[in-house]
Image (cartoon, rainbow, N blue to C red):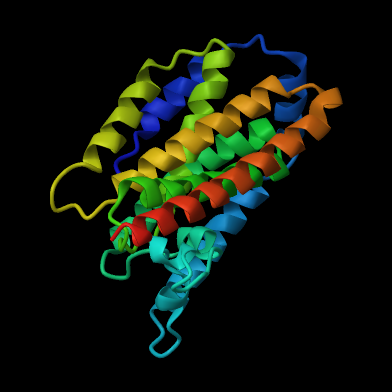
Length: 247
């Protein structure tokens, strides 16, 4: 995960338009009535898993990390597409600290805007999309872990929603660009494939949320989210098996 700019996010909140569609106003107001419980819960769960990763003999990392091979007949464990999101490198504590700090910033913004269940769905689908990005763009035997793909998905959703609301996104585009570029720096050992996949997946979910924001469209919204999740898993399985078969 790259760098985050708290000042940019503060300015983004200040520059957000005051006139918003009624549906989003209701969602935002509902979120403000309580703390961002889902955001805090994800951070707590990720921290707990990180502690467990350090305990000798448990084998938490080996049991939960993702590799495209785990979507093939060789060892079919598709749940790793999500479980890997809650793992982080034990060799670099900066990895988890920066990811959780970024989650804390964007999580408060988006959970308050969308509501708890929508935010959780966004985070998980973005995590799936990050894994699919690895399957499609990375070598077939690439092992990955970390929340970066899911967090890039939060950024993608935030950009789409704020753009639809007419917000000033200049600072956010700069922030996003810096984080993306860092993933391509040689020797950083960062999965830019997961970043890109999560970003696209999160942007798609953000678009779904905005275009189905009316209460009468709740069923359609849920159906689209389920469809996106199923499609991501299916694409991951198909591409992984094709790439392994092509070796």
